[in-house]
Length: 488
Image (cartoon, rainbow, N blue to C red; front, side, top):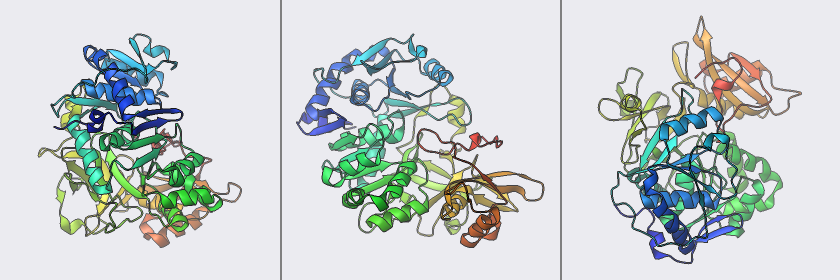
């Protein structure tokens, strides 16, 4: 297997990373990571206090150079979850910035401070593609978080497939403000540009002003974000000509980690003429689908496009039977199952969970529900555990109802769940944050709105109003946290 970061060997003065005032060229990154890497192999695994800083990037690159699995830690992690991750992964040391204040739960783990200005020789990277590179913990929505072991093979395969789909080169300058403890911000957002030999400009934290400054006139060519970020951009566009210009001049706008509402797609396209590209992946699979960046691709709001190169994707019915091409009608819902070189190796210390995650013929069960169009385009309709609603004999995806609700001018945010109903099996419940709390649209108005856009059996039977929807750090709605739902 070729090196993950061939540009490090060139040791050029080209910019590699910028975090606020900290800028590292490829030469400086090679020196800093080269100085840290020899101190790591005896540690077995290393935890990384994953703040949005150059120290985090240097720590992870050094671990990958040393062939030592890195365990990114969310700086906002709770005490109980942190204790579980430490007990499960047993890191030999913790990598952190010299000024980072750490919680008491990390006191027992030896600390190694990362110096981004250190200098050391750059050793050869591990040659075995199956060498574990990262252990990324899941969000733990259905139990304690599981450690997903990602190999060098999986990272390289996924990033190279994205490079093909997006024409991603060393000339691209990526802008984002994503956290660095998960796949989106770390693997795609840091390792992606480094593998290409391009540049990352991290905003520290997302801001509309930061995006406008770094894109367009600032030289940024690509923007990565999550739906919450794009929603804020869409809200600002009518009043911010500089932002309009910056988004218009960027080469590629990418949204991920959750579905981008069609309403925000349309607002951004109307203001800039640009269509936001959606991609689809998971911690266990890295990236699976995307719309391409070439002129012949067909971006469709609400669709995550086609499977990436090397990815096998199929839909399965509830009984496990595979849905054939005849079911690619844009309506038939099935669970996404995948295989390919981008998949994870195992759940750490969980052979039972690893085995249960795969079918007998070796396909990974994603738990995501989708429909496919006749030309193969994939549209996610929700999670099997929380978003598949069985009502009146129909299988309904919550996602399409949420998009329909968001198309109503009186709705700012929306989530949809199913609740037990003696007649229907499950009834559709809409959770709505109104645009005007003093004058929210009525339940009947919203039900009729959904029925007119989709079908009568997809209309909400009940509407509940909230001031805000509960969300995680990535902007995903936490449906189990909705009052009284109890859904996992």
